[in-house]
Image 1 (tube, rainbow, N blue to C red):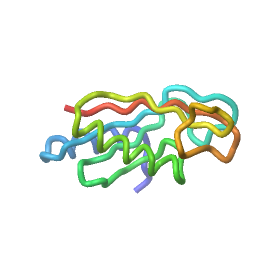
Image 2 (image 1 turned 30 degrees about the horizontal axis):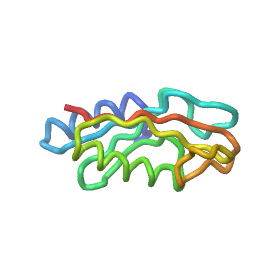
Image 3 (image 1 turned 135 degrees about the vertical axis):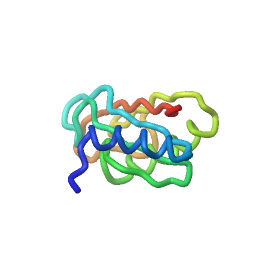
Image 4 (image 1 turned 180 degrees about the vertical axis):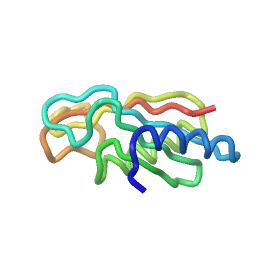
Length: 107
């Protein structure tokens, strides 16, 4: 199966209807070279299972970790990843760009 953003949203709905606690991460802004475009999604459940992509590599792992906090607390988060930005998270982009990812709980 080829995973598209439409598949990911449908899967988020299916996981939620199946009783899983779910968060949706969405790329909302990019600057420079970024591995995934604005609107890319990653769906994460409360057991750490995920589908889709917002970047790849260590950024994806950091988004999954933050999504688990969002599922637990119910409060959305805006995450920013980049290379030279002093406020960047621990994970960075090797391509030299920056991305912002919005993570929200799906009810």
